[in-house]
Length: 488
Image 1 (cartoon, rainbow, N blue to C red):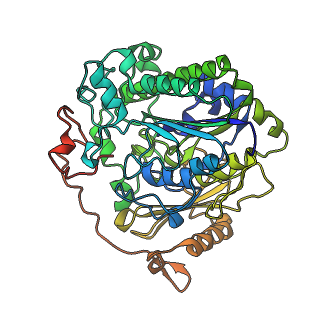
Image 2 (cartoon, rainbow, N blue to C red):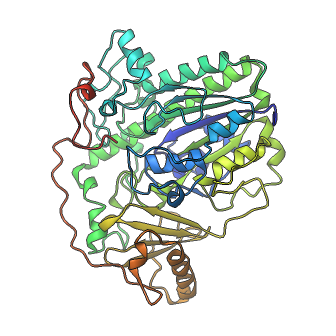
Image 3 (tube, one colour):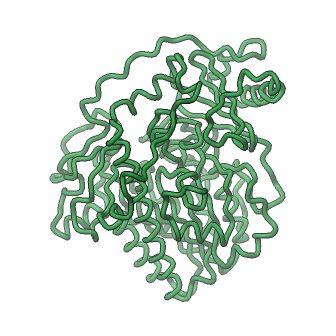
């Protein structure tokens, strides 16, 4: 057995690094997460290399890049790659491994190396599974009622949670994980993974947390920067969905988002309390992270799928008593990616890192020169190179290059791609980006120069499904129909 250290890994969905009090957000109320970050290792320069749920989680659970694990798009019926997962590596080292919440793998009941999974899949019945949360709701007398709140899974309209507090998905997941911790075999170390579906929409906070914020304090992002007002068809395309929301609706969405994050923060306190009362706290590595962020109307955009900071810059905190020994040894400002989470935790627990892992241990002497990101194919394809200070974003459709000095301009208000003083840096980053292109992307290059391609941006079809709106889930809809749209 490698060590007696336990691990509690807390993953949230769609939380930007910038939306924590720890990062200087004056509106955010995340005291527990902030405490863990201040008293642990706050890796504040970590990026999601494919900022959308499934590819990001594949990287998290395998330590593999999108190129290696096979998904840079969002392929919801793609099986996991043939590689040792994070859970399997811990299990092979003698750990009990348990997961609660959102997994987002296919098939849905694939445990990807965990001994057991208590599943909550956000109502994806089209893949044939009625998850554990839905079963539990039915047992409480609310069978099929989880989506009667009327809010779609990818919209930014909001309302308070419509059922009793105990039935809220965040509260339910916490209670199930507390039960898991209490059921641990006292003779073995444990790797616990809790995956909250929030703050990913639908934004459905409890009134308790919503009342902590006011609409007046919600600050709408300033999109009046020179590049966001560009006539470029590709940049205009990414702002189309946000145009649907009025100023009032945007403020309501921001308020609900902050309230949802505070709810999660309070639930983490219960997990720490359970570890303490189980005499495990002093021996547990506590991890907090997100799979990707949310633009939340920054630059006129919503959601993810972009390489601007709101979408791809995510929190990664390692805390707890076992992490204290690393505080003076580790550079927490180093450039990093989700692929590094698996090797870092294995290294801290003295477990061998599988050869399939592309990431590095952030508590070792290894360092990244840069991070390469890629998302989507076709007209909306986007690629990124980030070296820790400068970020280059490339849109092959229209052959658009953007360059930002993140150290000096964390809100990415100034595109420096035309700055003569930075020409050498721009060319170096372009070369690195070209060196990483694969699977057909090489056609965007002629004679060592990016040329991209010209294509007219077609209008998005009208979505009468209202961005993955659910209905009553009794009887389970997946048993009777094959959904025409991917349920994200």
